[in-house]
Image 1: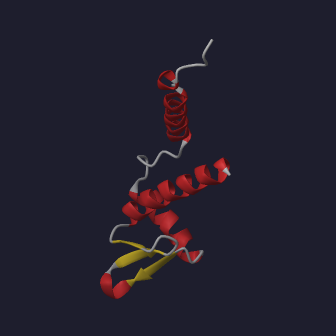
Image 2: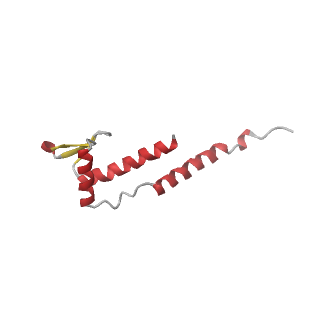
Image 3: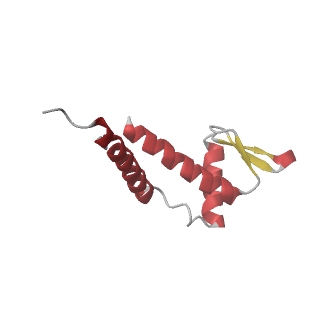
Length: 96
């Protein structure tokens, strides 16, 4: 009796399905960035400036997120970005 038909092999589909499920699980467990108010954002940005993670550029009125090189003109945008960036790095570290 011949082996299984290679055209009926669904293992690649199953692997893709598992990857999507893991990504959804990771997103559900990730940091919620929608709850960043102005005060929380300002506190986080001040902490990041003190830790040399963010560099303020007063003459351009921007904040530069040093690890990514991304510039922001809003402390709230920067805080949301940093939370998402940190959550993404943490998720990558868990996979290793």
